[in-house]
Image (cartoon, rainbow, N blue to C red; front, side, top):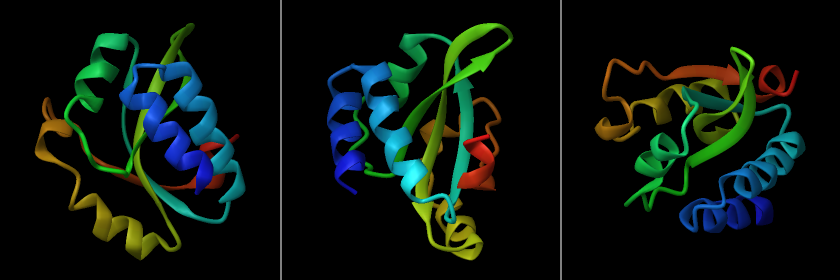
Length: 113
């Protein structure tokens, strides 16, 4: 989880691309796990608002291509089982679910394809 802590520090510091690389390294090390996908953000302001004031260690980002642009996918934690991920989805802060965001439980391996 060293990469996770590094990613959290970089996310809080506003270094989103570097944070995403650190989180990706951790996700690759936990391919058999599950995660909760939240939403895709294509502006740094959206990522900044999501991360602002968030002391939650579960929030993470990763770089994705979306409609031809480099964007960030925001997720919530990495869990050993699908059941744990489903339970954790209920703990996502309401401010991250604004605008109709529906958390989606997904195998980590699927995110890495």
